Image (cartoon, rainbow, N blue to C red; front, side):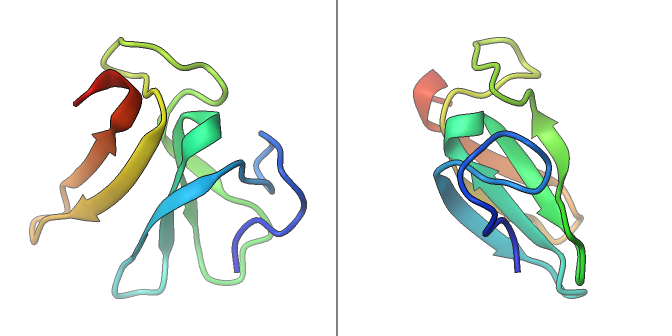
Length: 88
């Protein structure tokens, strides 16, 4: 469904996927912990799209994560991510 092409940081791979959220349309959002990003995989896609974070670039800035571990959305569609390495 997502990943399955070995560990890595390209769009078709994940590295330590941790948190998963599936929306009503079947789109999957995955916190890709070792790549410090959130990937979105639509139904039937061969690769994901980075929707938050910066691939393989951990850090403390607002656009970066350091080991994201969980994800959820509120009823209004706002995304919330637990950023373990930055304690936020």
